[in-house]
Image 1 (spheres, rainbow, N blue to C red):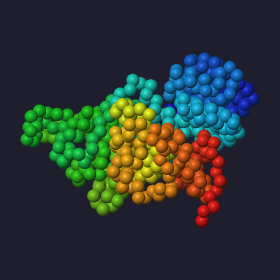
Image 2: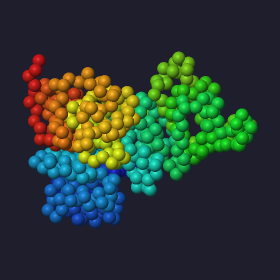
Image 3: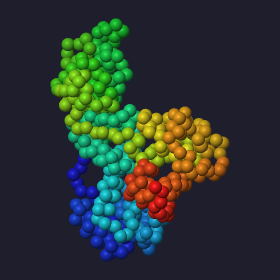
Image 4: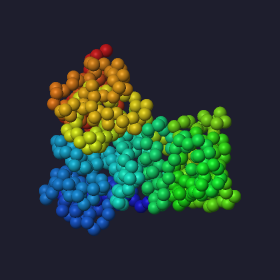
Length: 463
């Protein structure tokens, strides 16, 4: 990762506000440029590269929203943060739907703006691979939702690791996206022009796994009619990703350790070694420390693999990410099955959000595909369209805790459903923190949503 400071373009037609913000950011270690109008900002952007644009919403010659539209046409992945007065929150929310990263309401503190700047860069960094012609692999790497602080922190760490060759161990439950993060590290590294090779170590018996990893020479075993290179050779110059590395047998653990130490491989049946230049990223859904303590995993291999550890939280701890993932999968499978205008009723959405997802993101995606298939003719997804696993979980949700279903044909958008759920949670809550916990989001996010939907909070008097 480059050590150069972020270059930020500030756009405001009031010179005093523009200069005071510039001085604040310069003091925080950023490089800044200034534009006094939207048209001047576009001229500057046509001549130089910037990491972020911060613009006032209301300007004379061109509004912040109009400037945003123009920027998204010429630089679609450049983050834009809008500054707005409280009375124009609705306009700021509209701007976010057009692709703005976020907005700040006046007056704001230095901490507020620095937090949004760092968040915008965490999300932008892993998406910059889209500047290159996209491959199936790079598209998958960019397909990461990270609205929660835990995932933002993980992506920032992954970006920093991409600039090194240190071994990375990715931990997390099945379906949390470990392969995507491994591919992200590769795509952002100096090895990105070479192969990213992935294998699930639990998918093959030991003899076949050894041949798959190391290759073999002709006649080395029954069925070996030709010599064949293994995945380590295929990954030469690039990255190899070993998923479920905890399932390796003791013999395979010893062979992998030898590769990591010597950077050499030997095909099955051969007496000649070959040098390989590879980066190893591994993953597990088990606690390797515990396996090592019980003698099931070699400690020397563990310390070789665990140069740096990245942990991916389960989906049930990523409440702020679930809605975006749900929306994304609805779009994907609506297109696949040629369904349009799909929406969830409030009680269906409540069930989707309350489910614990032991299979994590992969399970959510499978659920959404089923819901799209079974949506009614008007495109409404109600209880009867939910997968069986979700229906079995219904007993954990009280009918009094969710709004009644919308009438047939009036399902509305996810945003309308979200507003109804927030209103219901606010009515039941004794304080904001309680409502945020029930909704599975942070208090800051809840306050932002309340401003977005123009909602007020009156504490419940229930005992």
